[in-house]
Image (tube, rainbow, N blue to C red; front, top):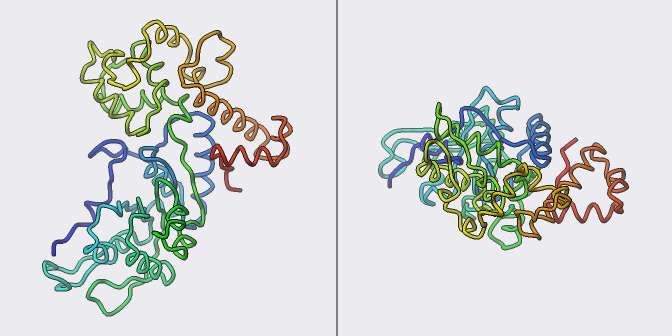
Length: 355
């Protein structure tokens, strides 16, 4: 039986293999990102467990790091582990540590992830991948705030804030019978939903600038005029992580530090004609995502249903921010009933910042 080092599990490289940002950072100035940062600021002041929900590549680990960095535990360790990457036979030893000789290959006593994160925060990424047997043991630790090393006979007190992340939310696992309901209630005290990139394409320009500065430090890299329009027209199922991969590939084909449309390699790029891309590039990246673009006489670069969804989301977010998240005032401003506003917020996954 082999052993994994907890240190090998602390960085999952969400923004590219082997590269971690120097500090927690969620780039973008769109309304969804402003609301998200406001939520993170409030969540950070609490010590309650947080369940972060978001599609692959939306920055769940970055959000967790931001919560940790802005909280009272910032000077203590932040440990991140991908629960789906640990073999089931090694899980107990990895999470709780082991005594020397606890199993074949355990040549030394070592601490687990909970002990390594003592005083700080532990991010359980893809927590819904944990097998049911491990969920029972995790629940016991959360209830008693004590761990026992594999092969040990005594418990150790631990003080750790638990953050967890999943793509679809833990409630889906509860409904499917693959995630324990009692553990769900322990972990899902506060839920934080991350918006996908297609719902905040107004952030594309600043994201491109940040990513290119990291991929090509000290180099002058620019985007050809049609590129931003082509990026806005693509749905990015892999979100910001996929955007980085696209830009890294395009950078390899860049001529004279200029990323051209034919270097992107997007599936939808061939469907964007040169005339339409050139025309759309005259509009700022924010106009590509806002209803005001319909008055400019240009066809939106996004598919119609996505364009309308984004427009509706932006209008509701703007009304909520202006009304300081007072639903009745925001509903009056939008010409909706409070019930209609609540339904649309649920449909568009719009969450209010915590008080």
